[in-house]
Image 1 (tube, rainbow, N blue to C red):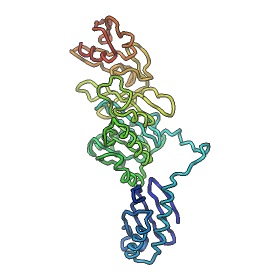
Image 2 (image 1 turned 90 degrees about the horizontal axis):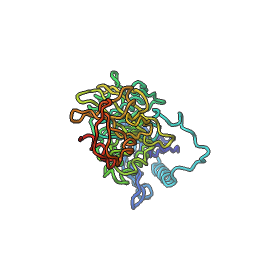
Image 3 (image 1 turned 90 degrees about the vertical axis):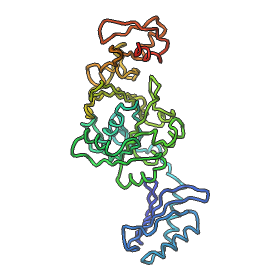
Image 4 (image 1 turned 60 degrees about the horizontal axis):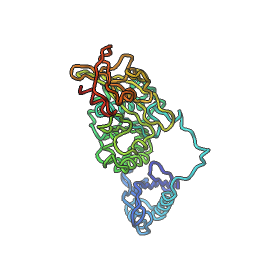
Length: 418
């Protein structure tokens, strides 16, 4: 008998008898280990594409094994020792499930190719990456652009060169197939690649088994999960939601770009919304910020690396989009008030990004017909408790006094309502 385990599916092949017995969806119950059993046998049925038998079976039950063997023998069109085959397969699967993965010598671990990077510096192979930010900042568009770069080997979509190609499956809890198709067409044009799409309802944990089958059948190597709050299935602010999500992702065994949101009231939003385990469970996280003029279809996006488990934080990335076409412009950002580099992403205001999306400053936020440039948090700290704050208007030498800044959290409100 040949035995193999792939993505949680246990396959026993009896070549001499032209029989394959497959066990999946293994789960421990009070009365023992149960699995979904599927038996394929050449010449045993009129239709070779239809399995001889498919049903739930208790692996450690003598009566259960005997009942299955008796039923299959009554349906089979040829003589086979079904009792012996099912007994052998059940014992082998039961032992493999209880033993789990064998240990290895750590010194013999094999390094992943290209340091594990798929789309430097955003995506690593086999690991979850989270894109997080406010609503309508372009997170889903960026996730789809990353998917197209990897699936179609297109370095022109984002200006980032993929190291390897992967078949992509887009798991969507928020939009629909036509919305994503329209975005894909605008991003990449014709002909469009064969990216797989699935509309999802319910938690990721509840869909692990069908997703494992899709991944195995279509040879999927990368997932887009949009978005994690809905994929969690329960309150995302709980540790159980985050841990269950990452456990399910680990069972699927492929890398993923995951779209998340941020806390609405946070001024310095360095972590995804919900439990701290969303930030801790991801191997890499990127904060997404957008600046866009009213009535304009051109917007600029800055990506700030907030976590990187495999090295130092990467410098900010900047991209510009016109009617969904994304173009990478440059790296780095500078606060125009304190002139300090924002390589550590300390500036909380998208309007302060100087060179993320190009050499020219981004448009300022407009309030009461006056364009005000909001300083970054480092600038504000120098003025906390001072009698007044002087803010340049429109880059000119004129200045305007504002009430004292009592805390960092009042800066945005003070300037935008003055």
